[in-house]
Amino acid sequence: MSTLNISKPAGNYRYRILAMLFLATTINYMDRSIMGILGPTLQEKFNWTNADYGYINMAFKAAYAIGMITMGSIIDRFGTRFGYTLSIIIWSIFGMLHAAVRPAFAFIGFMAARFGLGFGEAGNFPAAVKTVAEWFPKKDRAFATGIFNAGSNIGAVLAPLLIPLVVSSNGDNWQYAFLMTGFFSMIWVVLWLRTYRKPEEHPKVTPEELAYINQDSQPQDPTVKQEKLSWSKVLPLRQTWAFAVGKITDAVWFFFMFWSGIFFKQQFGLDSMKELGGALVVIYVVADIGSIGGGYLSKIFIDKGWSLNAARKMSLLICALCIAPVSLAALTDNVWVAVGLIALASGGHQAWSANLFTLVSDVMPKKAIASVVGIGGMVGAIAGMVVDFVLGNGLDASGNSFYFWMFLVAGLLYLVILLIIHLLLPNLEGVDENLEPITKIK
Image (cartoon, rainbow, N blue to C red; front, side, top):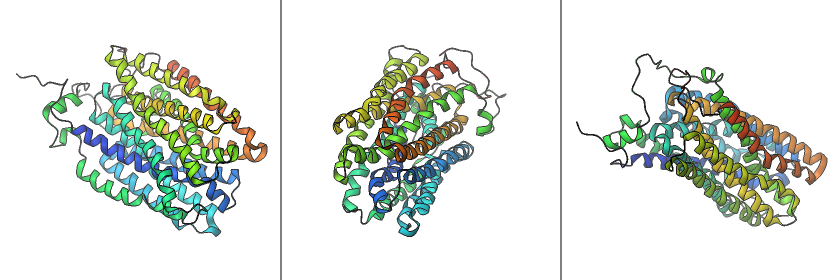
């Protein structure tokens, strides 16, 4: 009997699937980033207070939290092909509906549009992480996750570069910014439906590549329960809560994404869209490097013979140490020092995210991954809502000095969260297809 070579598989169709995840995440973050870039302009145009701006962002995160548990369950139940398509259609429709908001109803209108956008966008990461688990072996998942997650930063870089081309310096034609991604979304949906099947069902996947993808899979046990898992079945597991606690750090990323523009304007007087765009491009380029590098870092440790437990946690520790200096961002008088500190922290967060998402597929069966990611995303969105409420009202009450406390918490949070993850999963213990503990230490 011949043995298939799984070290160098003949075929790389999995990277075409990965490219689709990258493109979807890029579109996702272009839609999401528009508000952060236009925030100072819209705040002035519609006379929003900091608290008003915070409430609008809270609407996005409230829907994101609801969407995470809903879309995660849908994706686990009906599969990534259908779930991803549904997600991007919803977020594209509501993204474009921002342009229909009239000035007389700007506050309520933006809250409604942000709510719909948040619900649809919640499906991106549960679908993408589950797809990576379906198409890549464990040793490659952090790197693959880093690649598709880099799309978040590419989208965030493209947005400040493209928006000034369609929006005037005084904010006129702001509606066009919310319309420009709809066309890209339609193309993506067509390509996704033509491209995606599960590896074992795909005619373009060679036997060698399929063996490489499934090298971690266990032989099918007839006693395994094959039904799809809802979030309620994985909610009691400590593996679920290790990830969910880790996702509290999403609040920091949301802070960088939605409040950096306001911070740079209020703290340093960056008033023009060109100046603000330049600062944000630097931040998201470094974040992009962090996303890819963080995923690759974990792979390096594994290739050196480290255990999965040690590789993941050492990578997370390095990320947390890179983020810690952002505590000083509100204390400097130099705008580019602040940009550099936020950029380093953004790179650290994206590297952290690549490893944290991969941790789910390390400890959970494939059929539960989207549900677990959804639960974690819900926790992260709720944490982000708390930040929006506290920061918006704190700035109105105390002025710019309140930024100090936000940056201090942002810098120290990751080290605390990593300690909690380690206490919950000291040996990165997983569960099997029946959600029973796996005793083998990784």
